Each structure stands twice: as C-alpha cells, then as structure tokens.
Length: 424
Image (tube, rainbow, N blue to C red):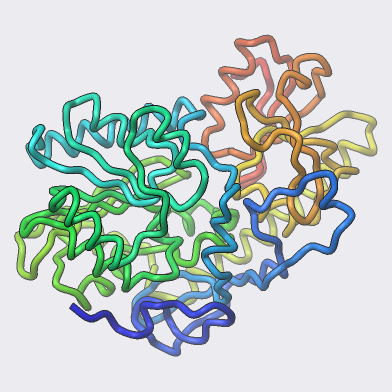
C-alpha cells in the first residue's frame, strides 16, 4: 500500500492541507514566532540565543482540518530528553487504565492478542493491558522509554515507520489493536505511520487514535492546544477524509473530556466495514456547529483576542494592587498561552510543578519563567494561583485546598474566571 506524497509533511512552511492537499487554507490566528513548548531551558541555556518558529493556526475549507503551517523536524521536537511523563499525573493514569478496560471489553481481547501503543511514553497505558493479561509492546522515540522498560513494559525506543513495523511483525506477530493517545496529531510522517499500522494489524484489527478534538477546541476557545507538536487538530470529517485515502474504515467514534475535550476514533483495517451510528451522529453535530464555515473560526479568533486582553488586565491590576500571583503547572499549552499573551516572570514569578516532575529546575521556553517544586505555594500562600492545566482545574483545586492551600484560583480559559478558595 503506497501513501500519497503529501502525507510526508516536509519540514518548513506548509502551503497545502496536510490531510487532503487542498490549497484552500485560511489563517485563523497568528500566535507569533514561538519556541518549542517542550524544549525547556536549563540555567546555562538562558545565556544562549533561542530558536523560535512561526506558529499560525490555519483551517482547510475542504476537509475542515485545523493545522499549523510550519513543521519543525520531528527529531528536534521529540528530542531524547523530552520531559513529558504520563504516569506522574494520577487523573491521566486512571484515565488510561479506563481506556484499556473499555477496549478489552469492546474487542473481546484475551492473552492471545497483542496490543501495541505508538508513542507509548512511560508505558502507563500499556500497563493497563498487561494487568489484564494482554500481550503488549510499546514504541517510544525518547529516553522516557527507559522508565517503561524498567517497569517491565517492553518498549522499543524508536520512531515508528514501515521498516520498524516489519521488524515488529517478524518478532511479535500481528496486533489486534494498535493505539495512539495524544500522538497521531503530532506526526510528520502520517503516511509512513498509517502504512506501518496497516502492515502490523490483523485483517480485522483496529487502530484507535485519541487526540484533541476540533469541536471542543473551537467551542472552548482553546487556542493553547496549538503548538508545534500539534501539527493538526482533527475534526471527525477530516479523519474520515484521511483514512478514505487508505484501505481503512472509520467504524466508531467516542468523545471524552481529556485535554479539555478529545475524540477517540476506531479505524478498522479494510474498506466497507460496518459503521456505528455514532459516526453519522457526530458528523451531523460538526455541521450544526459550523465546523465547515469560516465565520465559526473568525468568531473563535475574536474570543481568543478578548481573553488575552482580560487576562493581561487582570494580571496588571493584581500587581498594581500589591497582591501576589503565581502559576501552577507547566503543560505544553502553558508555553503557547504565556508566550502569546506576553507574560514573563515579572508578572508570574514562577510555575509550580509536582515534586515528581522532570521539569523542575528548568525554565519556560520563550519567557524564561522558572519551574519550581509546588511545595513553595504552601509556604508562600500567594493571593492568586493561575491554573495553566486549566482543563484539570477541579481536580487540582480540590487537591491543593485539601493539602492546606488558602489561595484563590484563576482559570484562564475558555473565559477568564476567578474561583474563591471558599467555593472549592
């Protein structure tokens, strides 16, 4: 199975749609030149020049996929010391365990079946399959793979492509399910990945992709999900358009609340497979929401620009009144938000992370805000804490308050709001 040439996204400026190759791309939001959100800086690096790249949110009027129009080479984005670990976030670890249980039930998986996770990170998702007796294998290009292997989650440290799929098939046999969570929107080599997945799946095998969902991004004003890792933000319509170009059928779809709203798409090997009513229902919802109309995206852009002004006014007013305000968490989306808004350490002196985070002692790219152990917020008790991982706001607020935090909380998106500590 050969893949279309445009499904190898070339490094640099992109002038046509990454999915359907249409030239009908519209600029929705220009977020300026920004650094790579997960290339955190050491103290020594603060004395060096810093690379930035264009970050523009584009919309394709043919297939409705939102995408960025500049691709940074994947080996630079997913460098060996990439600092993200899924297993240290309890809500995420629990969520990934639930994914496994639902897939085992849906596809009647047993000990004969092989489940492969591409972009498997520290093996948290695969751990759920392993506990239920399913055979597993992870594929992870960064050094995070060593954490998985240390925990007994067998992981190949490599980028996934057709050649690797051949090697895996020869050694482990074919897979019943292949998963990617928060990975499939990131890949420059879409064609290599889809062809490699096809090669590895059994004849009735299923590829399950979970990513941010365009409808939630637009309805939630979530511009902060746009960063260089996220080459594409999929609508269901665009995913169907993508897999129509291969021997696959989009057979089912689910929505979830992760990342502030996600889509989990089930893509079965072979054309003409039975399709769940969920697929048509969600396509209808996308149309009703106006995902096929430029005006929808222009309204989104206006909302983002308004949120920026409100946030900056709040920060400046807080500082002028002599009150203290700090940041909590440093997910990738924090880099987009703080760099686009223009917030530096004068306005937010630090970002507090979990004591187990690999990001401690580093600095936010672009704005150089230090990332520190969250124990500091319990000592200092600042007046306000900005929740950068605002999509987990409820869980974070409850935990911090239970541990003795007295501060009020600022939730920057989708619209700025302040939650009093007494209201948590």
